[in-house]
Length: 273
Image (cartoon, rainbow, N blue to C red; front, top):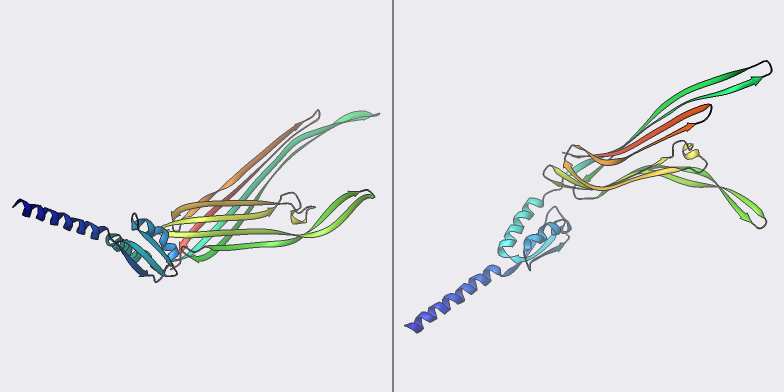
C-alpha cells in the first residue's frame, strides 16, 4: 500500500513537470506582414518575447521564437500595427525678428574772430525687420523626409600673400550657398505624433551688404531635437534670442545703441485623408 502511494506521487510529480515544460516550451512562428516592414516592428515586439525569446525578420516577414502565450500576444500587437501607414503633411516655419535703436546728442563749438557759437544735434533712429520662411513636405508615418531650398551666389574674395619679393594680392570669385532645410522622421500613435527633426537656415549677416558684401558673410542656425504633440497643433521647437546695447559718452556727445534678434522654429503635422 505504501509502495503504491509513493508510485502515484511520483507519477503526479512527473506529470506536473510535463505541464510546466510544455507551458514554457518555445515555438517558432513566422508572421507575414502586409503593410509595415519588419525593421519597423522588431524594436516594438522584441520585449514581448520574454526572457530567452527573440523577434527578428527582414523585408515583410517576422520570425518569432517564444512561448505560445507570448506568440499569441505578439500576433495581437502585429494585427494592430500592421496597417497601411498614414500620409502626413509636415509644415515647418522659421521666424526671424529683429529691432534696433540708436539715440544720441552731439555738439560742436565754433570759434571765429567775429564771434563764437555752438551747434547741437539730436538724432533718434529705430528700425525693425521680419523674415519668415515656411516649408512643407509630405511623407508616410515612420519614413524619413527631407526638403531643402537655397540660393547660390558668386562672392568676390581677396587673398593677400606676403612673399620675399613683396605683397601679392589675388582676386577670385567663389560660390557661396545659402540653404534652408528640414530633416524629419514622424511616428504616430493614435492622435499623438513624435518627431525626430533637424532644421537649418543660412542667412546673410545684416549690415554686411548681404551676399554682395566683401566676404559674403553669413550665419547658420541649426536645431536638432525630438518632440511629441497632437496632430494638427503647432509645436514650438525652440529658438534663440540675443540682445546687445552700447553707450558712448564724450565731452560734447553722447549716444546709445541697442539691437535685439529673435529666431524661433515651429512645426505642425497633419494627416492627409
